[in-house]
Length: 111
Image (cartoon, rainbow, N blue to C red; front, side, top):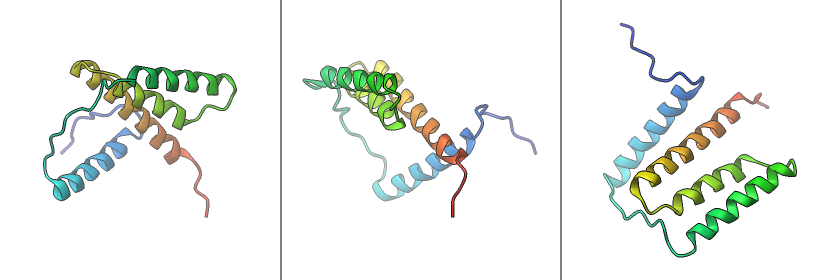
């Protein structure tokens, strides 16, 4: 039986399957969890601005890394108070993490 393709980005299916497997391990270990978001705290906007500027400066200097990009996205998420905007930022965090994983997976393996 043939199933429809739900992932069109090359390599994303394998990454999504790895994420799903990790979520299954988390659920088995911790169960279904519910916590406060912990976002929009005092100073969170300044932290987001700092990481945004740091990321831009690093790339301007030719020294940008996946770490810069991910931290910028994480701190932008942490600055959000609105649940819909937070969700959008977390999707961006996940997409950057997936892009970083895809980059690692595309590298030649060394022994």
